[in-house]
Amino acid sequence: MKYIKGLLWLLVFLVMAVIYNFSAQPASASDKASKNITKKIVNILPQTKKLPEDKKQEKIKNMDGTLRKFAHFILFFILGIVVFLALLVNLNFSSIWRLWAVCLVICILYAAFDEAHQLFVDGRSAEVRDIAIDFTGSFTGSGLIMLILKK
Image 1 (cartoon, rainbow, N blue to C red):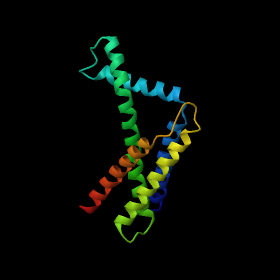
Image 2: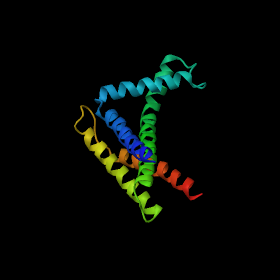
Image 3: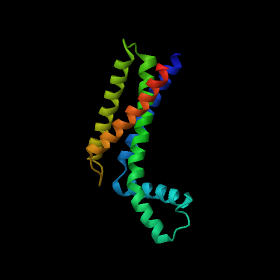
Image 4: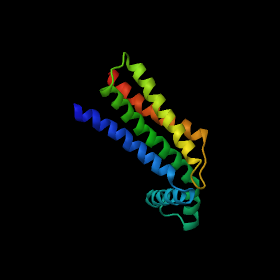
């Protein structure tokens, strides 16, 4: 059990490091990476893979922002899960609701830190909307674990 406790905190810091590294990319590198992923998706989806190149480029442009926001959600969904589990096995909370509240505070503080950090990265900005998306991901991920534990 001792190893699981440490492993969970390691996972928390690993997920945080991944998020930090994505946020540390200058806007041009982040945009290029994002568009490359979007292009791969457009090229494999049945409804878009046979489109002419100009239409594909339009789809890439239209889908890229949504996929970037979805990536925010997924990364913080994972963070919410690992923070919740790390708190659950490492600390003794009087109620599962208090544990969940602490988990959500940690996640939203990290989301705010992540956005503030981007103010110092070339071409990046901080967006309150991204904090809301991040929080929603954390809420959903940790909430899923809450539901599983309650059943």
